[in-house]
Structure formats: C-alpha cells, structure tokens
Length: 438
Image (cartoon, rainbow, N blue to C red; front, side):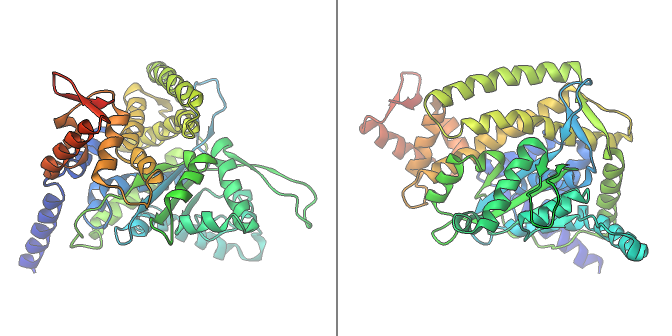
C-alpha cells in the first residue's frame, strides 16, 4: 500500500515537472500565482492543479470565480465612506475540446460550494411548508426569469454556462437566451437586477445581488465558437465583462480526487470565508487607494487611445477598474481567513497591487490571444500570426523576449518568421537587435 502511494506521488510529481519543461507559458504561471495569491489560497490552487486536467491559470481563475458565491451580501467600496457594490466576477474559458474546461468549474464547485448546498438543503427540508423561498447556490441552465427568482430569494450564486459559444450564437434568434445574456450584463455592471414586468407580477423590483461568480466555457471551432462569433462578442461588449483564459493545456494528472484531509481543509477554508464575508463592506485603505488611482490614470490613457482609434476593446479597459476592486476584496478575504482576522475591512496596498498584477497577466497571456483568434481567417493561429501579434503589442522586443512569450522550443522557427517579416518590410530590427513593427 505504501509502495503504491509512493508511486502515485512520484508520478504526480513527474507529471507536474513535465508540465513545466520547455515552455515558459507553463513554467511561469506557477510562480506567478504563488506571488499574487495569499499563501493558503495558493496551496489550494496547487493541490487542485494536481487532479484537474486544466491549466493552472484556468484553475486559479475558477477558484476566484467561485468565491463570490460565498460572499452572502459582502460589498467592496473605493473608500470607507462609500456604500460599496456587490462582488461579482465573470470568467470565460475558450479552448479546444479535451483540455478540462468543464472539469475545472465542477471540481472547484465540489470542494468549495457543495457543503453550502447541503446545508441549505437541510434547512429547506426542516422548514416544511412554512418556508416559501429557497436560496440557491448553483444555477446553470437558467432563463432570465429563473435567475430573477433565485436572486430575489437572496441567493449568492455560482453559475456555469457550458457551450457558451452555442448559447451566444442561438441567442440571436432565441429571446429566452437573449434575455438571460442581457440580465447577466446588467448584473455585472451594476451589481443589481431589475425584474421584468410579467403578467402575474404587480410591479418590477430592484434586486441587489448578494454575490455571483460566472464560469462560461466554450470549445473553439466552426461548430462552437468561430472567429466571427468572437468578434461580435467583443464588438457588442459582452466579452468585455469576462476575465478570459484561452487555450492552454497540460499533461493529464494521474490523480482525480483530493485526499480526505485536503478536502476537509478546503471546506474549512470555504466555511470561514463565508462567515467572514457575510454582509461586510470592504474598502481600499489609503495606500491601496493610491495604487488604484495610479492604475486609474493608466487605464484612462489606454481607454482614450482605444476610443479614438475605434477599438472595440475600449470597454474592457473601463471595466478593469471595477474588476480590480472585486478581485482585491476576494484576495483580502482570503488573507483574513489565513490570519483569522474577521474584523479587518481595509484592503492594503499589497492586495490591491496583486489584483492589478492578475489583470495584467491575463491580458498579456490570454486576452491578446483571444484578439488574435478573433481576427484570424480560419480560427487557426499560425506562428506568424502570433509573432505579428507580439510586435503589434510591444513597441520594441528582443528576440529573447519574443521567444519567451511564445515558445522556447520553437526558437529557430520564430527567428525564421522574424527574418521573413523583415524581408516583407512588415517588421524592422534595429542595430541593438530589437524588433518592432514597421
């Protein structure tokens, strides 16, 4: 038995090591998440990474998007004097079939949220006929009306939308799905929802959302999510509300479940998070506010540039300001759990800075890949497309930097592509060896 255990752990270690060989897109993320996440949360992400066939970026973001379902009315405010807004986070995972998209959401749901669903079920059963409203933890294949009812019952939700590309495409001719998407966009922007005036209702109601994490997944390809669909999602502002993970993969893990003590540890963390979050308002401290204001200035510059050149992703820049505060609040709560400080409501500079780093990382390694996919002809990104994308995004890049961002084991191919682009007068290389777009 011990020998089998040793073999399992050794194989898991080898699998993890193989995941990090020869590609900085695989090597860098683990150290990145260790840097930006509170240590207890990082250990959970690392444990899940050993059992889920999804890239660690997908797992880390899946965890962050599950936490709002534990917030139970918690809010984040820019200052102590503000009322604050609900904590809502949306993520979208786009990748080929078989890289663990749905499993990432379901595993996180299992370990972070199933205990809460069980407890609410017990309350429902013990209440008999006297209980007229029921809170939900999970809501997947829902209509806008179902979403309204759930939120009206003060549910903090974890929503999973599988086959998101097909849902979006069919919403063009399906009013039920179109209403659901419009409702989700409204919830993200304001943290509230105005119910529709239905036949059996006397008046519309304004509902404050208690907390929501949305996980959307879609296979990329002609039968699911095409480049044309992606361009439309960006143009109409839908995708601007999502943190995007695109296409990364890793070797298949040997193990499929956590050990009992790991499971108990995550449930204990989730219970404490839920207790510490309930109905609290978290706000940026003075130093955190200063970092946020600098970020605000930077976002303003990027927004103005994109607005004037009519770039459809300008709206994404604006929403980064809101998202940064929401992520900071979640990281702060995780730190409170780790330090057992339930009455610490002030978000510090380190936490605010970590939230911004997460957004910058996702933009660098994922959102720009989505843009390249959206503007590709057939949905397949050639190495040349990816090299061009790098030169368009960075004013000057050394050969080493370009190779590091793309694929170290394709060094010679990347150099050949760059030489070809220079020959075509599409790119330049200066006397110091820095490449740029012509």
